[in-house]
Amino acid sequence: VNARTPFIAGNWKMNLDHLQSIAFVQKLAWSLKDSKHDYASVEAAVFPPFTDLRSVQTLIDADKLELSLGAQDLSDNDSGAYTGDISGAFLARLDVKYVIVGHSERRTIHGETDEVVASKVAAAHRNGLVPVLCVGETAEDLEKHGPSAVPVAQLRAALASIPGTAEIVVAYEPVWAIGSGQAATPDQAEQVCAALRETLVEVLGADAAAATRILYGGSVKSGNIAAFMREPNVDGALVGGASLDIPEFASIVRFQH
Ligand code: PEP
Image (cartoon, rainbow, N blue to C red; front, side, top):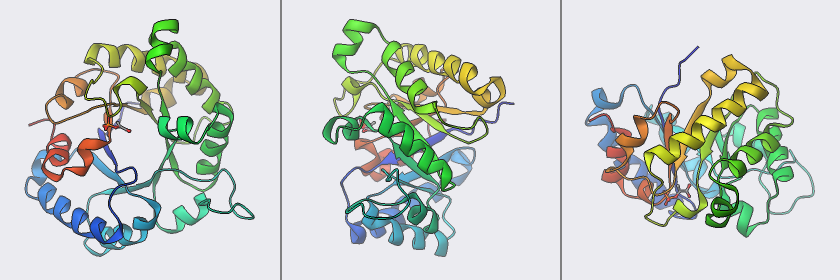
C-alpha cells in the first residue's frame, strides 16, 4: 500500500477573524483554481481558529471548494463541565475532517503533556476526526539527545492507545524551526521522518505505516517546499506563517511547478 496523497496544511494559528476568513478563503480558492491542473494530486487544507470554522465550512460546501478543513485543537472530553473547551463531536458536526493535536505551542504555552496529547488523539478518533499529531524536539533536546529521540518518544506516547486501523497524520516540527525562518535541511527532515515511519511500522504494522502521511513543518516556504517533497519519507508540510500569504501558500500547494 502506498497511496500517500501529498498534504499541504495551513495552520493559521490565532490569525484571521471569521469575516477575514471568508475573504481569505475565497481569494485562496481563486488562486488555486487558476492552476487546478497543477495541483490536482495534492490535498490542501486550512486550519482556522474555532470561531471561523462555521464560515469556512459553509463556503467550502456552497462553492464546492477542493479544500479540506481542520481545527487547531480539541478537548479530550466529548461534553460536560469543561468551560472554554471544544468537543471533537462539535467539530465533526461542522464537517471538520482534521484536527491538530500536540502542537508545540500547546505543549509549551498550555503545558500539554504526552498523556494529554494521547488522550486528545483518542478523542479525535472517537469522533471520526483525523488527528494531525505534532512531534518535534527543541534546540536543547537536539543538543542533548540527537535528532530523533524526542520526536520518536512523543510519537510512541501518542500512539499508546490508538487502534492500528485509525487514520493519523504525523507532523514532524522541530521547535527550533517553527516561526524562526530557519528551516531544517531536507536531509535532517528525512532522517527524523524515516525514524518516525520505522516507529509506525513497529506500533501500527507495515501496511498502516506505509499508508500514513508524515509532514515536515517549520519555516516552510515556496522556495524550500520542493526539496522537502523530494525526500521519500516526507509526504507534505504543515505551514504556519506562510499559510497566511495567499500567493505564497498557493505556490506551496503547487510545489511540483
Ligand atoms: C507551525 O507552527 O506549525 C509552523 C510550521 O509554523 P511556521 O511555518 O511559521 O514555521
